[in-house]
Image (cartoon, rainbow, N blue to C red; front, side, top):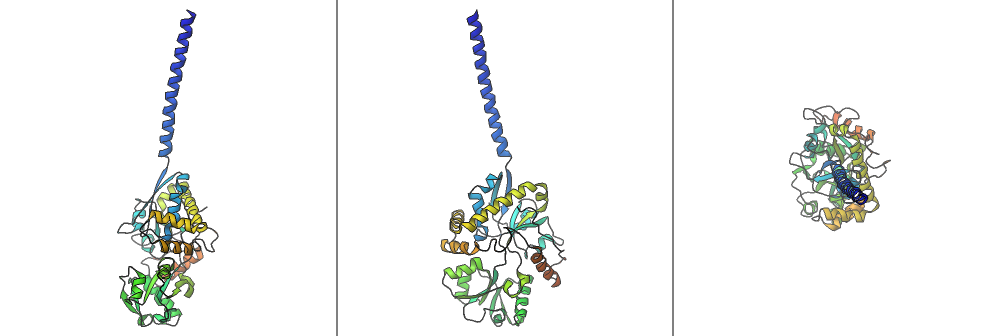
Length: 338
C-alpha cells in the first residue's frame, strides 16, 4: 500500500513538473512576444538618395543603436510630393528637411504639425562653385555669367543679397534653367558657369574628378545665410504623444553621427554597404569632410541656435518670401536632445 501511495505521489509530482515546464515555456514565449511588440516602429524619410548627410542614420541602424533603444526604424525614399508631406500626414515620424525649404510646410494655409528637432550639419555648407580662374570666386564675378537656376524665390533673393553685399548686380546674371544632374560634367562642358552646391558632396566630387574650381560659401558673405541645412524634421503630434521614444531616437542618432565623426572611414563603409551604387572615392572623401561639420563648434550634436534660426527667418519675413509671417523661435526645438 505504501509503495502504491509513493508511486502515486511521484507520478503526481512528475505531472506537476511537466505542467510547470509547459506553463513556463508559454510564459517565456509570451514575454518574448510582448518584448517584440514593445518595440516602437519609426519611419524615417530621406530628402533624396542616400549620401553622406545621412551616414549617421545608417550607422545607427547597422550598429544596433536604434534596436538598443527599443526602436525599429525603417529608412525610406521620399515620395513625389516630398518627405514633409509624409511626416506631416502622420504616415512617417521623421524626415530630412531644410530650414529654407520647410517654410511652406510649417506656416500658411498648408501648415502641418512639423518641427525641426536636430541639425544634421551645424553650419550651411552651400555656396557657388565655378571653374577656377574665371572670376567667380566672389559674388560680383557672376555678372555676365551663366548660372543654373531652379527659379525659386528664396534662391534668387539669396544670390541678389550676396551680390549686393559684394557690389554686384544680380540683374546682370544670365539665368539658365537648371537641368544639372552632374555638376562636374556641367562645368567641364561649359553648359553653365556657376552652380549652387553643397560643398560636402558636389564640391568634393569636383576634387575627386581633379577639376580645378573656385567656390564661395553664402555664410561667408552674409551671416544671415548661416541657416540650418539639413535638419531632422518630426511630426509634432507624434512627438508630444511619444516624448520618450523621440528622445531615444535622437539619442541613437547622435551615437550614429558621433561614430561617423570618430571613425569616418568605417562609417563610409557602412554607407557604401547600404547604398552600393555610390562612388567609393567620393563617399570616403565626403565623409572625411563632413566629419568636421556634423557638430563643428556647437555645444552638442543636433543643437539649433535660436539666434541663427531667427535671423534667417527674419530675413525671409523682411523680404516677403513667405506667404505668412514666421514667428520668432518657431519651427524648431532642442527639447528632445540629450
